[in-house]
Length: 163
Image 1 (cartoon, rainbow, N blue to C red):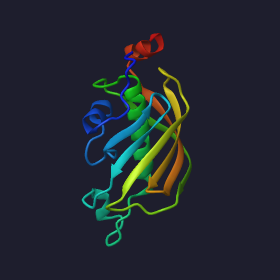
Image 2 (cartoon, rainbow, N blue to C red):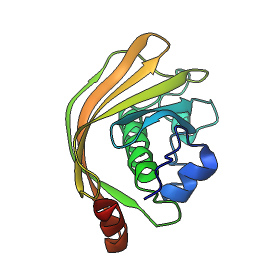
Image 3 (cartoon, rainbow, N blue to C red):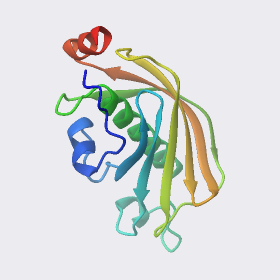
Image 4 (spheres, rainbow, N blue to C red):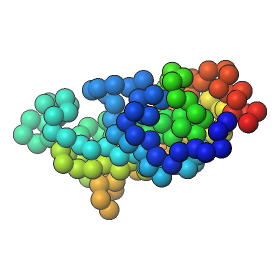
């Protein structure tokens, strides 16, 4: 495994790690990547996103479930960067979402920061648990604990656990 793990991920890197595409790619970049421990995802919320057509006409609000999905995508990219999973067809599946709370509306023009930390998981492991917080400036917009299963290629697991 490469000892030099990047501290950031741009949109190209994100798309080389997770399969999500428009309209369901919900993170624009990552910063402050701490391998296997956490990262901050950035989502620039814009009015032209499809969910704003119906949620809600005249009062566009980003659905809470999409905020949690953006947290999960941030976590998946963080783990993918940590394991050098570029171009490896990483798939990640929700197993549980616990303690979700929504504190502030998120809408067009907001910059949503997705602070994700690992609470359980190890290099090469398939089941991971994370704590996520969605922040707009200094305001907490949403938070949740979530568990995910990483569908990792066997050779990727071997490379991480042997490295």
